[in-house]
Length: 345
Image (cartoon, rainbow, N blue to C red; front, side):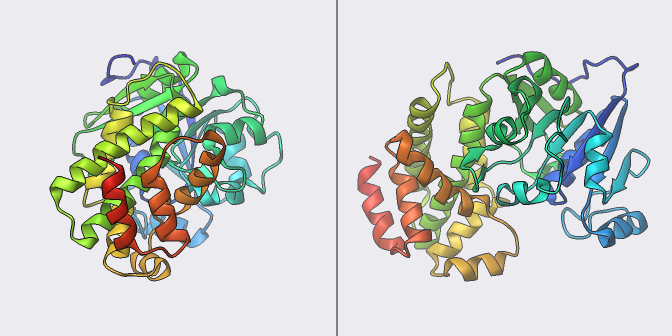
């Protein structure tokens, strides 16, 4: 990995045109970072709902997510025309829940992303194709891998909103693209770092959501911090086994994009996946937990798709297997987690 970026690298004479697809908390946070970055840029935010656009124009913030974050309308244009947003921008940042990426983009013509640079901020797997998002853009939209980058943490949108010091890792098989995106996404409270392990950090970002659910379940069942630390340690090893089995390359899973992202998702009060798991551990059904949260826990979808992907990878994944049994096979959380305690020593 390269050094951290704390200052822009791109010439101030160049104007970058960036289209944002997504209206949730993560998309809102990433737009805030872009606005707080001193580079010259044009930002267009695609919002499907015209009422949301009207609300932001009138009140200056997202009506449902990170409502304390002001949208700088001097820098951000709002549009409900997805085709125009894609056509008129050089960079397309996608920050849509993984389960809905294909549905959102399906209306676009097949050649829409030709000559575009894709930045994935989706921490999930496309359930229709069982692909991480970089693979999805390569195979479905014919975007070359050298034109795709991915953003990973450890970084919660809520702390971005509060401008707490945070770190992003930008991954791409093309180092110049990774550094370009890293330069765009650093500011006074965000440091960025680059890597070429795009597939590794994408899979790690998916798996950590599953493991955060496991941590939440155990907390809901009454397990303490001592076991939580063992569980997270085992999750890190499980991540390493899966990555080695699916995509071998030189990587250190103790780096921020792997272990750091796992830790913040497993322990943070802002973690939706941990919250979802905690409710399951306390006896909520899957459906009732989802309704109570009123927000999407990516790990719900990730658990099923990663379980199916692992059938061909064949890595040893006892934590993933236990969470799958609890969520999709109605297994007893108490019984399965007790069995898990003996498998992860």
